[in-house]
Length: 301
Image 1: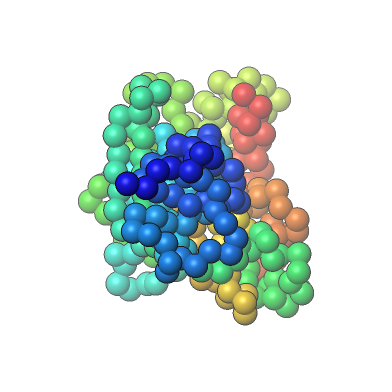
Image 2 (image 1 turned 135 degrees about the horizontal axis):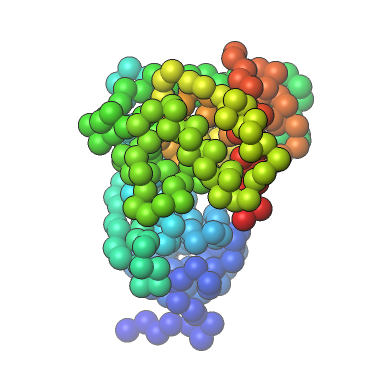
């Protein structure tokens, strides 16, 4: 029987530092020697790398062959979003494909599940890590490629899980973020009018007063809801050495939203001049002053 090294620790979020590599044996991890030949590891041992560890979600890669995302804020809606996109036959969007999922009641949060999504590994680098090294031509090209993916997503047909709900997560459940209902249980959003009413309600509930009378007219209107990623940002875009997109990550907010929603989210990403380039390359622009006003107030609560 092989004993654990004296510096081993449990495989849990508070034991793993973002960016570090570890040797994992069962539910124990310990520092990984560098370099290490994966092919020489004993059975039951693997190398894991902590890709992200924040906001109640731990993301680790296993021998750079697959990725596991786990935590009490990992929702079924995220895996359903990826499966919805992967199932499309008429359009192709690069993203991880889901290998398996597991969801169980959280031990610490009564209203949450502890979720685990095992997915394929997307090779490349984040756009975030390479953006400032790109010339203007490359920045424009990758932004246009992102918009092309956005338009492909918009063509995805509604699923049976969603039915006639106007705005919801990919699995038909209520969305989080600024559209989250202040009432429990959450009320479904069945029309664009109800989406605008929800945004106005969130603004007032968060203490907004300056635009109390003007906000209803400032909020954009839409005559259709479309499939939307909801969190496209440089850290969720993977690119290769030729600056071509290899995958879109971070599908936790994906679902059905008014057609302006993706644009509104992209225009509010606080990273370098990326949003500026996305605005320049957008085929269509919306007036999102009302959305920005709601976000500003709600973010302070």
